[in-house]
Length: 243
Image (cartoon, rainbow, N blue to C red; front, side, top):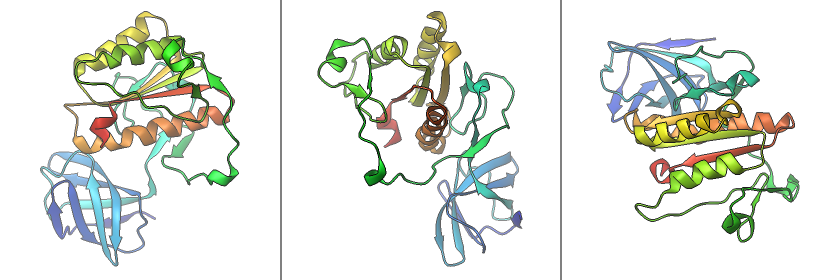
């Protein structure tokens, strides 16, 4: 059951506070303001006080605006139709294509018990000797690539994407400059890899709050493809913007 409230108690930065009951942590809400509809997520519950983080920022939101809780967490579509598409930090199409609404799955699912995990052993070959020989990338594991200012890490990331022996590439961009976003997208497209790639990109011009959703969306999509037998490589850049 959708719950609607029209009295916001406090607005502080990108966070709004209202009094509500029957709300759960992580639940999604829509705020109707003079600038249009904005999504928000419950980030804290203190008794009857509910704190929501507004993805597009609280600019234009007033205390009398309507807040409608959707009774669910943020969801992302999962299907082969995602391949070759580009989305923003909240899963909306950035490429002008249709909105996908089938096979929706909630992002940020339950945590895996590490004691129940199988020991990772299948190597992902990247074709880059310094990675394959000295810091091998293994399925279900991650490696971090640290660089100093001015180093061509996007070029390295694109090379990993093109050379890695995987079925699907998922690129999550956080706070990217628009020219960096175009470089990564155009490189994948020119090398014929865009058709097996999914891009979830937050640019420096987008609302800052949307940046933190990129890893969750990217990894949720990756997990679902992996459970269907696909070998998936997730590339996240630039994690400094996430922090």
